[in-house]
Length: 193
Image 1 (tube, helix red, strand yellow):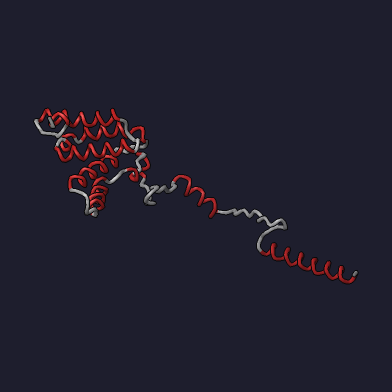
Image 2 (cartoon, one colour):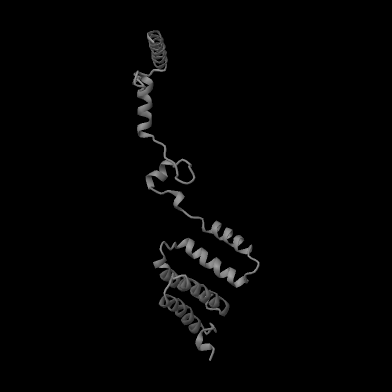
């Protein structure tokens, strides 16, 4: 038994020495932590001075360098949205629907562009967004086919509990009053009688 224990002790001691030798060759101390090595000289100091006043910043989405002028103005061009590009992509996506009428596609394009330019961040603001949409596009929505699309869209939003009845009524009233002032047959309930 004693011989076995002394053999194990020798092996353990040899392992420990080999570990210490390896750690020292890698610049580590016994606890496995790197020893701090300080560089003193012109190289480290000049690097520090160079980066202090000339730090490079990048746009958050495109990763392109920000120019000094953009930095001074505080403008990030990543915040700019390309409405024309969105409109083209939206039209292309809507054209893929073959079982939808062209008026419905056009209405959805108007709605998508409106929501892209005026984001609605909460369901609670969708009713207000519908009113602003109707006010903004009342000339186009006053035609009977587009009014029908608007009413169907509002009913769909109402079914999903996104807008209230008064929001629907306000949006439709805006379109109908414009149509009435221009003498356009909007297709409202009073025209059915």
